Length: 255
Image (cartoon, rainbow, N blue to C red; front, side, top):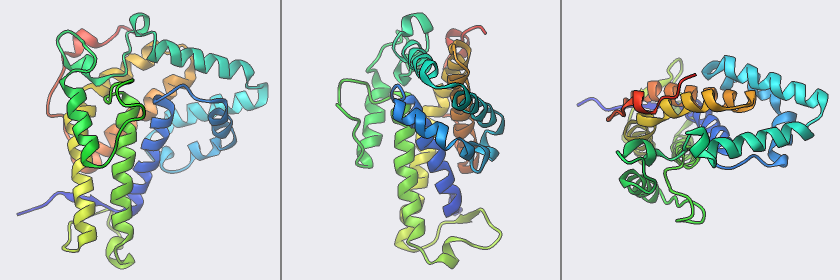
């Protein structure tokens, strides 16, 4: 019987970096320290994995940060924080709720059934959201953080393998082996694939399209594009497909 593939160690690490980047900018309003870090390290946006997965959006974000570095960041920090508040908290006005359950329930409720399903997925990997109960587990930023964690587990398992077995020459994907480390890497890869299929791929394309439409600043328009490109690229690499669908017409906002 054929098994699903395991991505090579370098590929898993690349997607982990992308998911961590997206989570940091989605889970909470970026601090001035984080913005300073983005400005100082903006050249990384022109390198891998950003250059392959989301070249246009990454280049656009690089341009934004380049201009900020030249012109000063004070107004920029205020504008980004204001845009985050509008997109993630003023959802009655922006209509860009970051919670999966809003898109997966008929009455668009928070803390719906998918919230508990997501929590169960987290717990299976020892993950618990900060201040449990204050913010639903199915916040888009937390879901990216979960992918980051499980991809990190897969990367650690692959790193434990012999270099020759873990990095077969000329191959990006290989079949699961018999060692404990490879079995753990397969378990982690399967968890990522399932989580994408059961959750993020169902609602995130509509969510990020709306976020891009409603964002006032080019910063969060670029973040939306990078985030969606990351999900779609990872899904393609793992063979993940949505297991459910939402009424996109009911949720998609006009541009």
